Image (tube, rainbow, N blue to C red):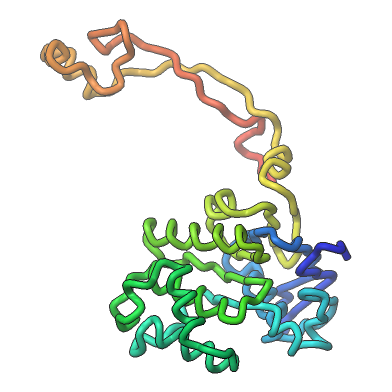
Length: 286
């Protein structure tokens, strides 16, 4: 195991009846990094998260969090980890501040009110802190949910598809929150099926497919697995809109959208560069 690995997984297997979900997963998450675990629905991402958070026993293999074995030291693992599931686990009847105070009390922390106020400020929820959570937007609920999971400052944060169902603006809010966690020194394991999310956030990306990690590396390393890009030039045919405007003479007052410089009638064919991968269309680059 790497000396700086906050999460270390080797040979983890899990089956449900005759269905083998995990077939020998190997994964390392270095301390202070963001690792994205990519996979289709049913690939086993949530199963692995549940094993790491001691909610589900593995059939085989070993897993440690902050050096603590998830099977032999579940209590120490729970002290070291926070888990945010796919859906916000917040009490809508309570205010945002009351949710945080409740969790702080359950963790037996001194001065729960101060803990709650600090987290409200950290996640830009001070103005909404006195409002009932039922009035929060999706992004605000998700930020509150992550804030609740950080009560007690656990060093490892596991986010299981944290932006599922969120609108684009709320997704960006959660992304900023995740980047902030890493900037403050937390180790983040993020599961997602959104490729752009992994590109935006992750230091390393692991791809889980058919129960195993089939590739693990930085975005640059994964891109290098495909053949180099080649440049092809294709003729750009005028659109019907361009033809119509050219024929009726409107280009004199308003040049058609997309008309290249030096071709006022918009009917000349031009060349534009497009990048394609050097792989056949009937092949799978994976």
